[in-house]
Length: 85
Image (cartoon, rainbow, N blue to C red):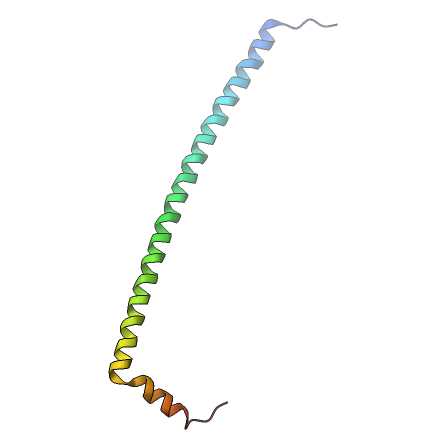
């Protein structure tokens, strides 16, 4: 049976400790990247919601304009005389 040298174990433990520190630093970096991406997604979702609101507002205004100018009724009446495919 071979004897285990204490220095060899000590060197191996130091390597394991260095590797553990590097892993923890990498994990911390990944967490930061993940948080950054989350924040960007939340910002994009807010932008998309704002765009939806703007589009809904524009559609409402367009409906009011069409109603005021009676364009809908004209388009419906005109469609009766146009050939259907």
